[in-house]
Length: 592
Image 1: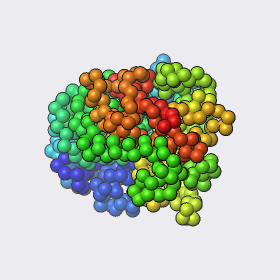
Image 2: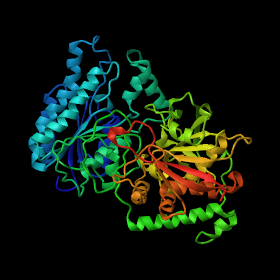
Image 3: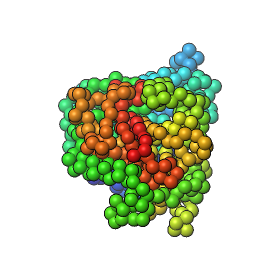
């Protein structure tokens, strides 16, 4: 595709979920879409919203292979060319064990899910060769992981993974990417929870039900936006010359950093996990990876630039002074100076007052497991080393700006801003913390800020409507919520699985003085930094370190005067996705 303007795209499975979200993103960017779906009632509004000159709707079932040829003909007759396909349709049925489903049921599933997609690709290839176009195949985690009763669906999606590789060899002028979007809040997920439970294992039923209850499902707009961006953006490193490279990585890394997925003619299988705020640093180094059905995180940073490094070192040293001094002394260090840095957010009532929803679970919840299970934090080794023995004392807290399970949905939810006395939209920001109030340990597990989350609202939320609470305020209030007044003070903070790009690059640069030639992550104990050194100060001044610094500097009256005494960087003992792992940080606290 020679430019990123006015693409002509055929999109299947367009009536809801990821398909509908992708359609909105592409149409809002003035691309032309032919939308295929068995039901089209939800697509008619797109014509009035974006214009009949940009939208063509075709009602059809792709198990009727003639629909594929008809779709391509309509696109060519209407717009004169074809630039991309998004093969996004798919049905879960039959949800039965292999020994219980009939061959005819499998045939119907493959006719729609697989052969309909193949027919569309075959019909489109002559045009895509001319336009040097792209094909996105929506795969699934079920293509590489077994779920009881999903045999036909998973096998069909596995075909797409291999089809991407085959097309890489056979069609050098067309980029093909197979995408695993993650677990997304769609009608299929609702059906899994409400209709298909009896055919699934108890473990799988609990998993999908828990993801919904805990807010762990992705919104369709997240993978939808990423898929759309991949089709319409160019990258300076689209020329990776590795035709049979099989990669599993976070597609959003690429979109945030570069705007798209590398347009090598290599067949690619990419997975969208639960971390959408992390760009992949350049330059990208292609590697052979082993597919594993686990959440995707990545540790492959380049070094931090000199400007980023200098700013982080300066900020880190400033934060250390703010933590060590009195409240008034900390205020005088800022430019311009202020009388006090103390946070005005001191009460749990600040959460509902600013539109935040709070959910708390004890360790029986798998998401509060400190062990090395698939859903665990993998921190038992670290906790044992620092003397944490009260393994049943953990409480996990999820804090969301708005209620993701509420009605209406997040896009329509509002809150009353106490400062401006106005009604404003929620951002969908969410945070996850694990708290051990006996041993004095706070784990910062996830931080999706209002700035990050607001871009996924429809329409996006304007920054003027963001709540005033900072991430450090959220962390403090969650610690305060779980901490009785008689227990030990805060002794350790753990930032779990750091995926922020700048923090990763600063850590990578700080590691230069250690005997770590590959600069990969290792289990605890691995690297320890003196925060007063430039290396330690750079980590302190990183995006993840700033939140810790402000937490301590702005809450002296409540926490006491605490500073960071040592910084430990290590890899949590989780199952690293596809051979990749990311750093975690243990912030050891104490008196100045």
